[in-house]
Length: 67
Image 1: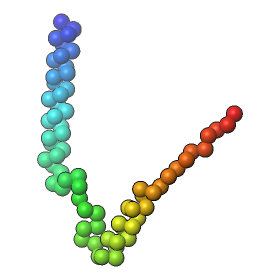
Image 2 (image 1 turned 90 degrees about the vertical axis):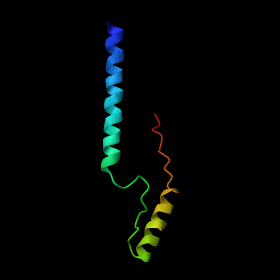
Image 3 (image 1 turned 120 degrees about the vertical axis):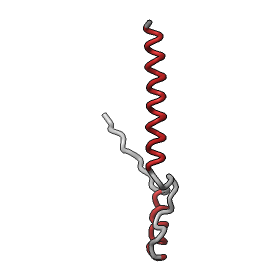
Image 4 (image 1 turned 180 degrees about the vertical axis):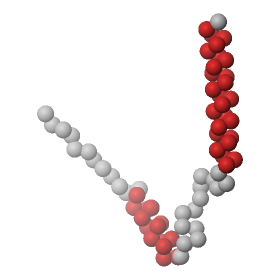
């Protein structure tokens, strides 16, 4: 009985999750890959691109707490 109930719960959770994902994808009109600053002036687009390029160079080395 417990195995049957567990499998039923898993199937229901899968159906619910799939339904929610489909709901959110249909609700959002734009996709995940939207150009940033698409309708901005050229100078602003260049500044956005420059700052986004800098993000990849950020490196952080945390300091170790010595005892």
